[in-house]
Length: 164
Image (cartoon, rainbow, N blue to C red; front, top):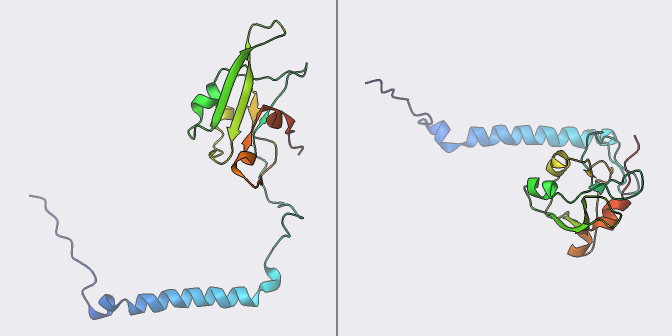
């Protein structure tokens, strides 16, 4: 019938006790411990936040930012594509009509909750007018209360592109 019988391992007393495996693991752990203790001058550390990391990739996704047009107005047309594409559902947009006579909308409110954001970049990919980017270079964002991590439209417009 094509039935294959697979022999069961671990039948010997040595394998049932697990002691050889435990001692093998301890040997590996202790060898790494003593190697690290002997090479303390070679351990690379930085004094963060006074000294920023130097090994951040240029494609790193930092904190979000909203871009502006040449005339200084916000580039976002409140199409809700970024909020729709966001798997964490951390983007909230409230639209309003533009006051300068242009036939499109603009965001009255544009909030991103950084505590819920997974920094996947889906919002950047979904935006049809390149209004939202994650190239601010800000990788460390701190606050004392939850409200500090909800960025509004003005804060997102204040972030500048990281100069390479």
